[in-house]
Length: 160
Image 1: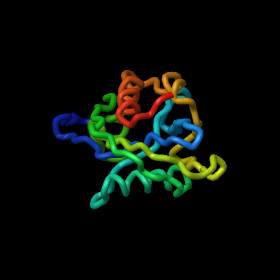
Image 2: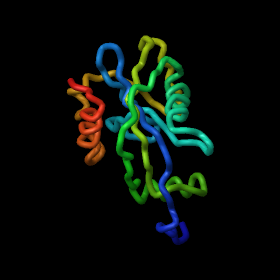
Image 3: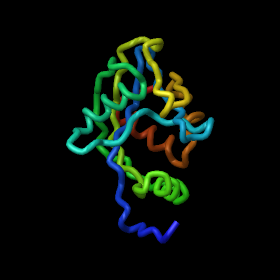
């Protein structure tokens, strides 16, 4: 790949949802582009002209095949981070454009349906799992991610 002007790459505007069910379990997903033990939360990029709350509900509907979600809270801080350089290069080679990282708006969302109503988009997600909040550390393996999410859960008033 020719020289990349890293300073010109911006941050992707995005959303992410911490989805809680009626049993106080939280939804984690294993994305297609992640390794087997790398879990995250659902969400995605904000389209032009779209509001963040519209984005998160659209992404949940697209990724999880249900519209039984209700936004309860929006995080005060934006989660801004850089992607690994090899991932940026891969996206640039694949799509011809990319970003240096993401700025994610975090939402607390309640799932009002039943687990059997979730039908994942297998192009984006390998599998999903409802986990106890106290077990999140086993799933959030990216460096510093679990600690970030602990603070968000505290902000949202979510306890084990």
